Image 1 (cartoon, one colour):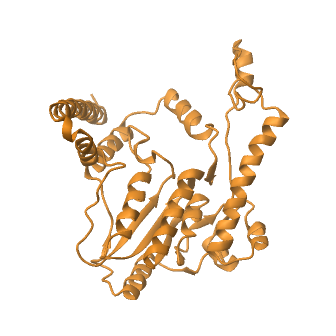
Image 2: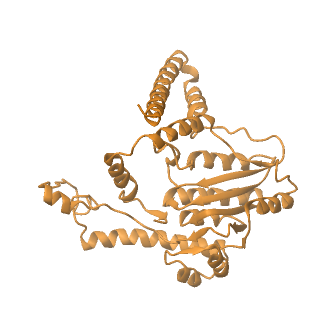
Length: 341
């Protein structure tokens, strides 16, 4: 048996064991909660936060001056950090919302540093985090700086509009100001296979977007109206964040991607500079140490599972079923997105 196959078997075994351990842990938690009903609600929050993080997670912030780092990495969405058995995009919406709230209430926090390496994502979560960052600035008066790594497109760019200053790596791509709704239509395939979709609905547009049906002109107009409304919101956010005339924003916001140099010339960013130089500048402005005072929260349990499942993914082949599932869930789900394809 080849070494790679042996390693694959071992990793697969570890994954199975990890899942088993998770199941045992769940049973223990359930027994504990049944034994102590008085504190059940608090126990659920504490235990699940300890194991997996989430809505009720309390982050242990530093007890000295610090700059909070938000890593906006990967696709922005409700469950990006737990969307796959084999790993995550790195974005954890609920943790970030909670993190900003805690920093807002911390006397030791001096500012927020947004590290963005994202193609964007869902409209709802993008705007929710943006508004949370504005709330933080308005209530604390503390600064927010943003830095673009390889990309800060669409929703990634949108979130950075809460920043006072925007810096970019010279090789970053940004912009892609716009909205997209992707639908998957399989009617042609269904017809070849002799499959016919039948939907019993309460109205003629209730099933619009179904894979087995063609969109009518009316339904296309309905979806376009949703896209246009979200687009107008995006344009307004950029106009406010960059102190730019809305008409100019619309000329830039045709969905195209800009290089860092092009974005600087268009007024979409402030400077092109390296990450360490930007951190030095921000720390100096706030009277902090660039090497000691930047704080990034981590979920150790999630990191463990992500690392384990990530190794398994490298060795196990991706099946056609996995690919099909990914296409249906992530590329044809009909969700409004500020996203760069």
